[in-house]
Image (cartoon, rainbow over all chains, first blue to last red):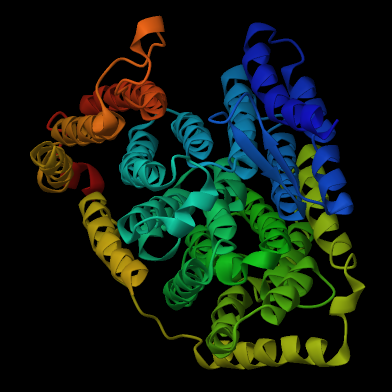
Length: 476
Length: 111
């Protein structure tokens, strides 16, 4: 039963992705229908809360693993893709766009379900191609360059990953994730390099801010909300394999939180601020792997909603926004999502942060609590944007997309009532209050951070350095 | 076997260095191909670590040193994917060449 449900969930979007190309009439309705149906399977997984291991074909075939964490990631994917599709409803995009959107959705699902290195590799490469075609959808020079840069970085990282995968096979006679626990340190280093680059974690993820900030609005929401999580997801699986791997991954998480956090304070462009915040939030997702699912859901919803609203703002420059102000309803969407990311009760972000902080190791909790200040300082800049009555070109479908994301953000704040105890609420409000005070004192100060390390050659060079660093960590 | 492995790893490193050092986008894409050739060869080498006989079951050939079929099957998928990504990148480079005839990466990034 569960096997056929999984297969349908995995295959249906692929089939639809190709079929809508052949039957272009009513393609948007078909896509919305499939995405709505695909909400049910992840919900079943979350409510059922059991783990299932599936092997397709024979011993060397495709292996899949499903549990509640998979369910949360799949649910995030369905919700974010659905909202993005509704957002694009009347923009007159061609059937090609929707077809690629479905293939992207399907390949991200594949990455979340796979439990061996090769199935994951295939899913992630299909994802890269679909993402490239979507990034270059409007065919201008800049978007083609951004797409090529994305493909370059991800393909090189996946080549390193493939070497790691064959070393795992050599040691275990199987490509299963489990094999990494008794593989040589060079295999661990190569695999972790591939995954951190795809997932945009720490210095390997420095390709991410420019890509996410300069693509079209719906694409930013998809890439930041869900696509990078496909790269992060195996890290969560690998962390459960052994103490050594878990410590490495938790350490990378801490480094990622700070790398993103330090840059985010000085961001002047709203899309760049959101992209840099993804860089640091991904660190929180893998900081405590057991409860990563809920954090991914809360981050995906809030970040997608924020990125979608940026498409309807009069400007991307924060200073101009502070002067002009924005539409009152848009302001509400942005405020709810920002507060959720800051971890204010009673929103999804608060529950996610509480769950994550409960599972932290002693050496992690102080630096990660301090790092929440970065997020608060940065999102305070969005909260101070004034609102006003204004007629804008925002249609019904946009409101539907925004309300889908914000309503789920609010509802999922209530699903785990045990998170609401007095001391946890107080604990979440103290860093927020401190952060707001710091952000007031920082007002008017400006620092221009260098961006030259985001050049293609430096990104590639950084990969070799990261590889050495990871090898050293795996060895010790 | 050891020498072959060293040569294959050298191919991978040369490809990677080519990508970092060459300024022209087309040369970078070619270097990526060199690197992926190295990775494919490494899979083949690991498949052949216990024998080189084609892994087809025949009646009077049991117990012989067969090559491992799994890495070969896996790398076939990777070759197809690598090839399609290569093609996609070359089309992208062609489109970019209209505005940037030199295809110099620093010039493209500077815009």
